[in-house]
Picture 1: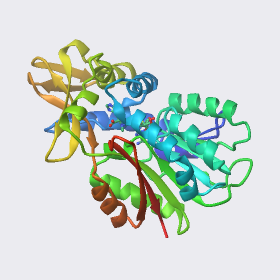
Picture 2: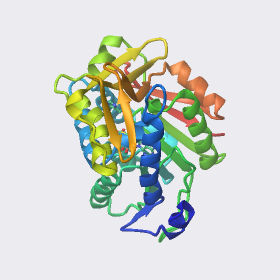
Picture 3: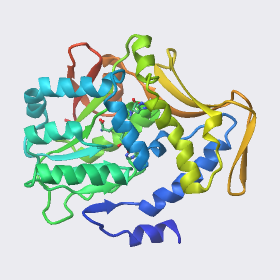
Length: 333
Ligand code: SAH
Ligand code: AVI
């Protein structure tokens, strides 16, 4: 079935807009084959998040070494009043990469939005978070969107039982923006600038540049949860695409690339080997890697400059007490 036909047939399911479920599945196969055919093999990090990947990420968020979640939760609690005044109560709150929705709960409580639109590529995370939020905030109009924010995405603002009113605020926590290249981050910010309109705003969680040892520990936890998260990408390829990757012959490798200001995650082939997906065969030399994720870190000024180039003003930023993580308040006017 053609992609456009699938799009037309997409219907509202169980309170979730499956913007493109079938297209997302097609995209996975195409992107994996294209990524493994590159001279330097690479896979897009958005494919980490199947149901198991989302569960592993939730475990990462609770690790002693992984400070970003704790830091962002702490700064959000500490500055909630000021953050709510900046965003404005009664707004329509659109959250990209909403995941488990831990921080969203704090914002929803403080902002009492007219509507909440979580967008996530992980159907499992979206379903779980939406059900929990519906129990906790029975008054809240939630319209969950299963989709990929790296593609033009139609947000059903105004669709559903009630039309949404008020200012539009896009929430993008967790430093998920760091998983985009700076050029992709710029394009994403421009897209959201158009989406929120001249009166709108954005709240973006951004991990700050810091001591490389702290960063290294956060992406190389002693319990091996990040390694399992990384390797799950190959397990997902085996499960969903019929691949025959031998997970015992790939290793997790993460390091801080100072020149690029980013953590790089790789899966390194521990031996000369080959793996197949259907009729596609991929050869690996011993030590050759698949680049699976970048996680860019930005100083306050670097991120402000990026936001300004995309058409936002950057009047506010809130930090945790240790200065590890920032929540930027961006204004469109
Ligand atoms: N916001 C949460 C989760 C961050 S993890 C937090 O701050 O803890 C990143 C989330 O973004 C995951 O839930 C993942 O499924 C989602 N995600 C990653 N790439 C995406 C994409 N291209 N489109 C939509 N969601 C995406
Ligand atoms: C979702 N994202 C911001 C996480 C990060 O820190 O880049 C994903 C992650 N990768 C390894 N650990 C966590």
